[in-house]
Image 1 (cartoon, one colour):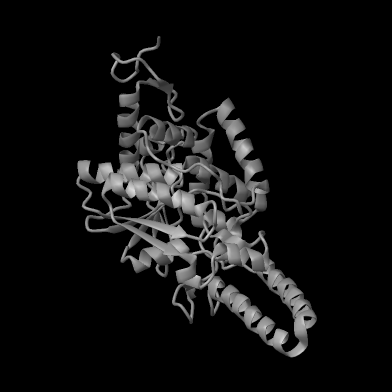
Image 2 (cartoon, rainbow, N blue to C red; image 1 turned 45 degrees about the vertical axis):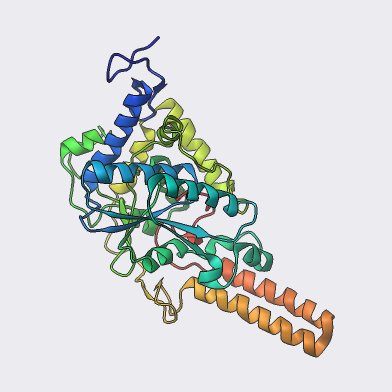
Length: 382
C-alpha cells in the first residue's frame, strides 16, 4: 500500500494528474479545492459584490465548478452572489435528462437556478432548428448562456472549461493558423507574472517573467459579458476524480448533435502527449497565453446588434440573422402552399433550405474564442 503524500496517514487512493502525487480521498478533495482557490487568487477574476452566473449543463465540469465555487466562496469570503444558469436547447432525450441532474445540484447547493430555453430566446427549439437547417451548423445559435446571465442580472459568467479544453483549443487554433483567436486567448493586455507564479504553473522553459498567469482566464471586452474560467488550470482527470470522491450528481451523455471529427482528433493527440509527458497540457495552455500579436494583424471590432442589443460584428448578430432566415422560410412556405399547392411548396422549401444552409456555412459571428460559429466541435461542457 502507498501512503498519502499529504497526510502520511491515509492510504493513497489515486495519483493526481496535475502533479503526479499519491493522495487519499480526503486529501485529494482538499488539494483540488486549494489548487482552484490559488488559481482564482492569481488570476484575480472576482471582486466582492460580483453576481456570478455559473453555467451548468449537468455535466461533470460545470457540476464540479458549482460545488467548488460554492465551498470556496464561503470558506474564503469571496463575497460573491452565485446563481446557477442552465440553457434548455430543447433536445429531447438529452437536455431534459441533464436538467434533472442540474435540479438535484440546485437542491444540494441551495443556490438559485434559472433555466432559459431556446424557445424563450429564439422562438425555436434546437430540434426544430436542426429539422430546418440540418445538423452541421445548428450550434451557430450562440450566446444563449450570455443572454441568460444578463437576464439574471449577472456581471460575470463562470464556465467549467478546464486545462484539457484550453490545450485543445490552443492546438486547434495553431493547426488552423487562426492568429486572431490565438491572440484573443493570449495575454496582450495582461500584466506579466513573476517568476514564482510561472514556475508554480508548471512552465520551467522560460524564466523571463513574460508569461501571464491571468491570460485567458477572463474573456470578453467592453461590449460583452466577461467569462471567467476558475478551473482553467485543472486537469480533466482530476475533475472526474473530484466528482467521484465527492459523490456528485452529473450527466455523462454527450449531446446528440455534437460533431466530433476535428476536435476529437486533437483531443486524442493531447491525451497521447499527456501520457508521455503529463505537464504537456499546461505547457500548451501557457504557450497560447504567452503569444503576442504583431501590430499589422488587424482584429475585428465588435459592436451591438441593432435588433437585440447583443454583441455582434455586423449590423445584426448571427442569431438574429439566422432567425430571420428560419422565420422568413416558414412564412414563405405557408404562402406558397396556399397559392401553388404542395408541389410548389416542396420545391420552394428545398430551395430555401439550400440557400439558408449555404449562408450559414459561409458566415460566422466574429465573436469570442468559445463562440460556436468558430468550432468544428461544440461538445465542450461549460
